[in-house]
Length: 329
Ligand SMILES: O=C[C@H](O)COP(=O)(O)O
Image (cartoon, rainbow, N blue to C red; front, side, top):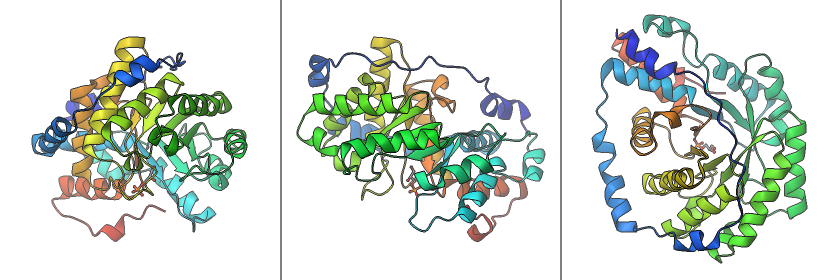
């Protein structure tokens, strides 16, 4: 077993990134942003075929992927019991025996992501583990409740102990090109978050075009987003590779101009280990290794961990276990 390669990817040192403070809304920059849809789609179509990590390297990348998961449950029938089980899973996402065989120490997921009502349960269950609780907010998933209530919801979630807040933007501001309104909204959400980090969910499946995705990404970063995130998981189209290329390149442009690194969170429908590997390779290619740390990259996923566990078990034992043996919550 290549312990060295496992260590290289799964135990890179934690670096503290200065928080993106945002900047004035630069409408000239926003309006200048274009997206060549056919070129982006062509490039995205080549990505799955380019994945070439095998065996020990693949196992190392899969372990890395686990550390980058916002382990999520966002269901109307969530219960205290389910959230507690999810938190236990976040602390021990892979069996210690499997990790030992691979020469690895303990790992955890990047965070646990829940609705507001479940924050206290999750905070209590994760006490002392260092795993942050992320809460979806601002009238998630549609974001159409009264503005003052959306802002107040953030404050309540931070007070309840959420260290990360996943807000949803008003899609109509993008669809009508009202960049000032989007900027003001995002800035208010960021201010309400205080010390908690804010992930801006664009709901890209509802934004109409890749150009809109690029512009909305930029405006949210200008307004101080710590992360930009594709989707709620509730739209009919969630994370895709073309959208990811556009958002990642917006992050790169923003970094080139301002020197601030903003994180990326693809979310919704990412449930297979092989898809996670494609995303990680894409980030490595387009943004570099620094973005493969939990402070700059997360998968928003409710079932990805189960498939990764199955692949790791297969890697170690040569046999696949049934999916039902890897429940999440
Ligand atoms: O942010 C996370 C998403 O809601 C999870 O979506 P998923 O259930 O399709 O993995």
